[in-house]
Length: 285
Image (tube, rainbow, N blue to C red):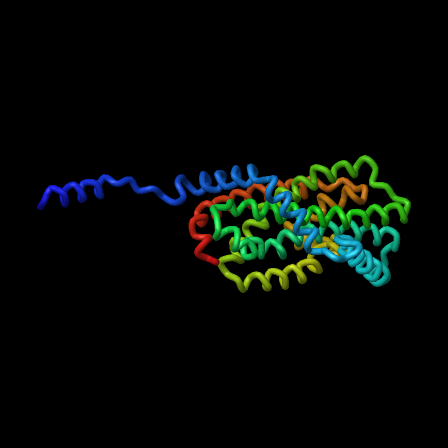
């Protein structure tokens, strides 16, 4: 064997192999979370511009969502309050608060299914933290929620009702819902990026879930025998911790416990999956 060949083989044997995603699953995930937070100005501006472009050349902009909600609540309030034999004034408040909260939570799932798919151009043109897509999506959903919240204020004024000091519980509840929304959007986005058939399937499931969750009807209507069905629904507890303070009722401790547990378990699972599959995501486009 000649000297140059031996030197080449020695260099090849001692060559350092650099992994494309160094560290464990959680190390990779937390690194991207840190990068996404550092890019907060990017996804905050992007979310704002997305709302502007979505409703460009319209006169009332995002308030079209508010008008749609108003017409829906008006029809549902008249019909269902009669069918369910509920006090119309109370039922209008119940459905209004429930629908604006449900709309926020449902957007994390239905629209979150497409956040990675629609971000293909950005994801393939540079090394971009995919977590930032989830942050940006939650920010856009929150902007739309604020427009619908105006209708809730109008309903409360029209019915001469105030949530009182209990309404302050909506602040930590909102923080908890938003934190859950980040991991829900990211996890659903990853799954739907890998299996595209789940994008329309997710929307169909959520159309059914709204009727299976106590949004239009009180949980007590299930009775003692079927009440556990609502208690085992994590979406119900996410709705409840935010809706009840808006109606002047403290959420039960069990709902807070459910939401905190959902956040811990869901966030841990999502970060682990994200870290394990981070290097594979570009190949799923």
